Image (cartoon, rainbow, N blue to C red):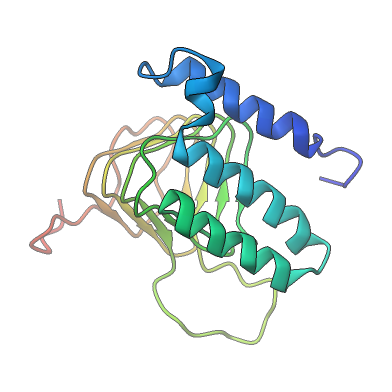
Length: 184
């Protein structure tokens, strides 16, 4: 998507605020939605992401730090988040630099969209984090790790560890590992 095709920053942030009103039953007004910490963190991320795209990595990093402090979430400025993403509660949400999140995705608290290692292979375009499709629901405490794809409309159950692609129409992860390490 080119810069000209991208919705304005103000439009994205307003859509996110309306999404809070539509999807969080505890928020009954715009004033209450403005107090939704994950919305504030998402708004900071959207600004940081635009700065990151323009090469202002230090300033983007400072906004990412502010997001961590104010909302309890760490979303790397390089992560690409779609429209109307809803993060419920938000604390301990971690989204890595090369993650891509589709439109109308719901993410609950303690979710990680991360990599499976710290190494780099020298390629700047190497994807280390997941690609999440549109309308995906990611349950509390789930970890989606590595350069995998989660298809549109998938649901990832709470506390799952997903390390393989989640194909279309499937409602649970292909490879899930419970807390004791058993593959389900």
